[in-house]
Image 1: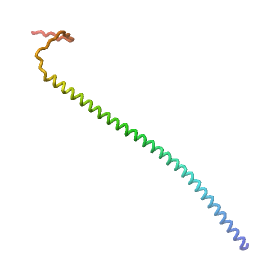
Image 2: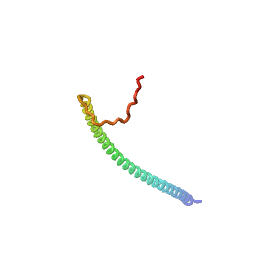
Image 3: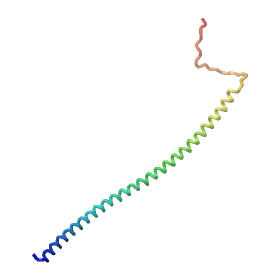
Image 4: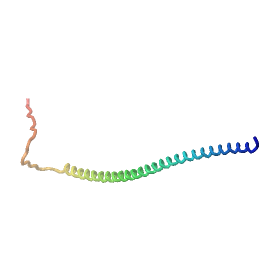
Length: 117
C-alpha cells in the first residue's frame, strides 16, 4: 500500500464520521424543532387560559361590587324600617286610653269556666 491509498482510506473514514455527525445534528435539530413547537403550543394555550381567567376574575369583581352595593342598600332600608317601627312602638306604649268602645266582639276561643269549689 502506498501513501495515497492510506490517505484515501483516512479521507473515507473522516467523510463517514462527518456524514454521521451531520446526520446526528440534523436528527437533534428536528427533535428540537418538534419540542419547540409543542412548547409554543403549550405557551399559547397557557396564554389563552390566563386571558380567560382574567376575564372571569373581572366579572366576579363586578358581581361582588354589585352585591356589596345591594347589601348596603338593603341594610339602609331595614334600618329605616326598624326606626319607623321603634317610633310607632313608642307612640303605642306612651298613649293613654281613657275610653274604649267595642261595637262588635267575636270570641274565638272562649275561656273554660272555672268552678269555684
